[in-house]
View 1 (cartoon, rainbow, N blue to C red):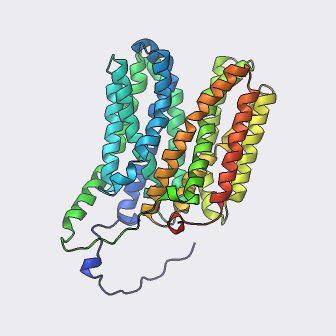
View 2: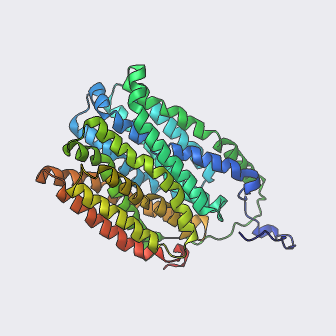
View 3: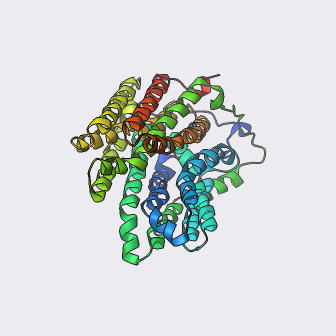
Length: 420
């Protein structure tokens, strides 16, 4: 690390060129921002995985039809794709802290309301409200890393990705025990509203500080002109979206079908569930280390090829020897799923500015989640049509080839602001 140097003495900044408000420095607001980011990350999948664990109980309790239950399971990717795309528009109008306060309140209220209703329609609508909060937060976290921790991108991205993975694992593992302890699926879902409410707290003082700074700004100040970043018009933007979508497609397919694959291979349901949980649990240290490695390498090609090799070996093993090598395939899958923290880190690495980061994050994630929605559906269709797992694993290998091709484009250093 280069030792800090004494700051040069500069002339006072002309009033007309002063920004309306400044980002708090790490010494003042950075610690609170980091705590807030970690708390938000813990919530980014809990509302989804807790519902997945209790879906049968929810279907029985609310009388959901098969079509409605299928729509509920697809709703996260729809919300992440559609509502995430609106986040840059929100950020151009309000400070990120204020947007996050509203997002976390939406998540809190949505999770509370969906467990007190007996209406299937209201349950879907309030679930959509909760997912709207998650969709906005998904886009904002990479921007906040770039804005507040530009020299610690890998470390901070690793920390919040690890928190996200931890929240995902804990919610999936504990939703059923909590429901059984309280005698209702409502408790197993509703308890996560408390965690979302806690995530609001650090952002309230930050939102008030941003509001005060904006009010204190002189009316004669002229904000600096912004150059609109349009990732959809660039090769890099589309490569990021395809990589994000392909890795998410595989991730959702694995989470949705891996337990069934192991059950078909002769494992008991409890053992199949533990093997699935093992993929997520083993992914926690991978989520922490991957962004740090990405931030230190000049080119990401070794990581892209390495992750491809891990995933390819796992898919082939699951197709031809799912029972005898189960633990090895789980380990390799956990390593291969490191593509998720890698792409989150790359969003920050491939943008020079916070505006560029949020634009790239919104485009890559919203477009990527549209692609990801096809994963569980197509795997299910192939499984039902063939009665086995060779064809579904072949499909995931094809998706992996697309992912790797896109990875070659994003691997070398470049910036979205320079693309035309």
